[in-house]
Structure formats: structure tokens, C-alpha cells
Length: 92
Image 1 (spheres, rainbow, N blue to C red):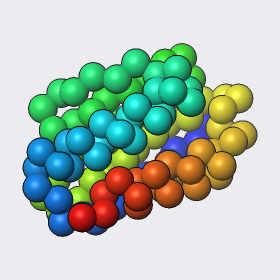
Image 2 (image 1 turned 60 degrees about the horizontal axis):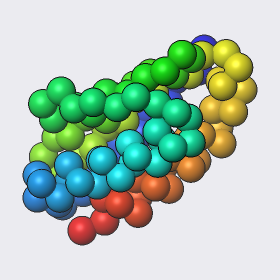
Image 3 (image 1 turned 90 degrees about the horizontal axis):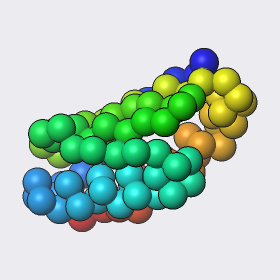
């Protein structure tokens, strides 16, 4: 099992940060067929072999993903793509 933890700083208003988080979730859902749902300021997602959460805090978005086998073998690629997407969408 592989874990991915990404922290992205931002200067977005809460509603803008939520929209940015949704963009990240939509991309993850498309690529990995994930089910996503909001739980307050936490966007949770899961499917067999993958689960995680994107937590919004003032000036920070924290993404945690747990990858099961065999997806864990692609952890570095997944982390690179998700990091890039977060950098793009959380730019003010």
C-alpha cells in the first residue's frame, strides 16, 4: 500500500478554494473512477483500492490518498499528476 500526501498553499477565498478542490476531485474521479462527496470542508473520495480526502483549511489544501495494490505501483506517477493539478487550480 502506498500513501500520497500533498500540501498546497493558496490565497483563495473559501468558495474559490472549494471550486478548485472540486476540479482536482473531478480529475481524480475521471482517471480512477472514484466516488466523491463533500463532508463539510473535506472532500472524500473512494473506490476499491483507492481512498482519500482533500481537506480545505485557510490558505492550505491538504490531499491524502491511500493506494492499494496494484495502483500503488503507479504511486509516483499519480503523485506527480495530482501535484501538478493542485498547483494549477489553487493559484490565486
